[in-house]
Length: 103
Image (cartoon, rainbow, N blue to C red; front, side, top):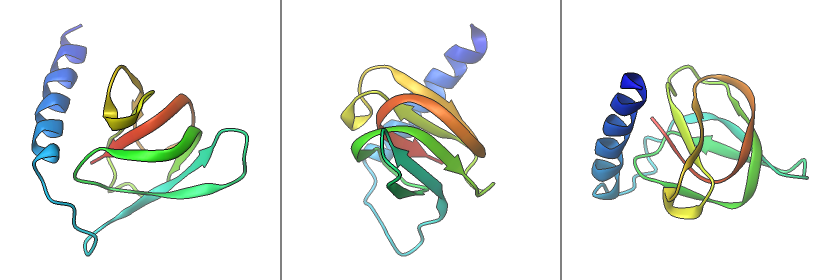
């Protein structure tokens, strides 16, 4: 419970900072790819300084860059509602997700 509480507090602080940050594309780091549910279509996954909405539902991700230490996915747009998955590098099947944040 303590770890979950600490993660929630840290994530809330990070999201607050990210919501106030301006998006920059010059220094983006590619973390890997996400795959849309029921499709072989993939989308590049980048380290980002704010919540990013996905075009469709994602349920498979491959984080191939160890510089991306933590990615958090949500089941709704705008990183709202419950987080559906969080973790680091590797290929992961995740619950249906519609937005994410990677640090």
